[in-house]
Amino acid sequence: MTTSMAASHAASKRLKDAIFGANAACHAAAEKYGADKVTNATIGKMIDDEGKLACLPTMERVYRSLPMTDIIDYAPISGLPAYLDAVVDLTFADHKPEGYLGSVATAGGTGAIHHAVANYAEHGTYVLTSDWFWGTYNVICNECGCKLTTYPLFDKDQNFNIEAYTAKVDEILKGQDSLLVIINTPAHNPTGFSLTEEDWENVLALTKKYAAQGKKMSILVDIAYIDYAGEKNETRKFMDKFAGLPDNILIMFSFSMSKGYTMYGQRTGALIGLSSSKEVIEEFKEINKYTSRATWSNINRGAMTLLTKIQQDKTSLAQFEKERADLYQLVQNRGDIFMKEAKECGLDALPYKGGFFLAVPAADPHAVCEELNKDLVFAVPLKLGVRVAACSVSTAKMHGIAAKLLKAKQKVEG
Image (tube, rainbow, N blue to C red; front, side, top):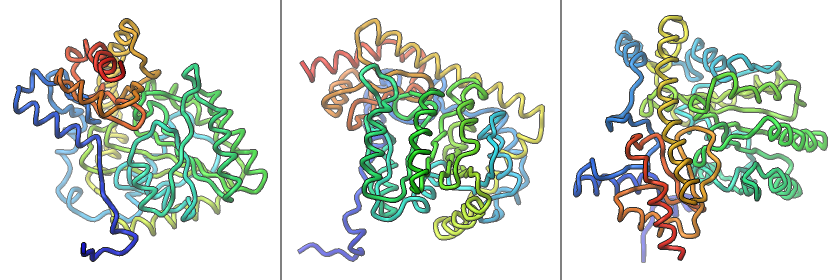
């Protein structure tokens, strides 16, 4: 008889993370065959073309200049006020919609997603996202007592599948009075896809339809990769559409310093709320502050101070944005190489607009990745296909991956 001391709702918890598992297998191969012979396309962090973890020089300079008290002291539970103002400005750039805005500091973008699910999805109800999704969404929903369900992201022409989205929303709202939707755009993980402005118009038209029927509608826009999606104002134009929505529609954004500031381990982010109702935003600030206190109390003061110091110094900000633009161009070039070679060799890759990742559909992703490993190329097997991390593959090593992936698929699928 197996003994368990865990509470009944916790005893079955087991974390199987395909990303870190694939990364561990890659490191083992590197030790055996040599790092130069192995291609690591598993992990979501920027590796430069020399194989080193990329760090934005201005970020490092400013961080190292901080007084020790700014690194070791507590921060307010909601976050430093200047940081909270700055993340709102960074989220919208020149496309800040009319409405009431609030923000709360979180432990990375993951913490922002956690708070949105914990506070805006009724226990036992469905949360909706696309069928290609970051697996942690499911972990968070399970932890918060909700159920993640999906719709097919792409139609037959590999455009946003508004018909499938609409059908799923219709189905869910027959059985519940509120709905939280998570939309990861621009530069979606794991495909690199981005919704168009027309896609957003269609999504919001459906949202307003149900709001008019008295349903409570919340949309969380996961913008973790927005700094690697293109020119900052061009990638944010869709945000103008969130102005003037009914009071029972809440738009939220999960902001992260992990990618845009190359500060993955500092775990600093924010959840931003936008509503036509002042009361909704006051509630947003209070309930998320409460959840922060109950989860991590407060977050990394030094990283929050770093962000505000860069934002407040025009010279540092200009240099920082140039450095980040160079990183964006580096990963975009790698993604373009993969997509060009995929087209040339006949590999069916999903449409890539930008960001850290690309994806290829596969009937048996695990078998395809195992076959790919024989060529010492390591990628991540997902439910629907294989994820390739353009961010972690050097430009030189990116050449040939598409052909190797096609060969692995053909070996597995015949």
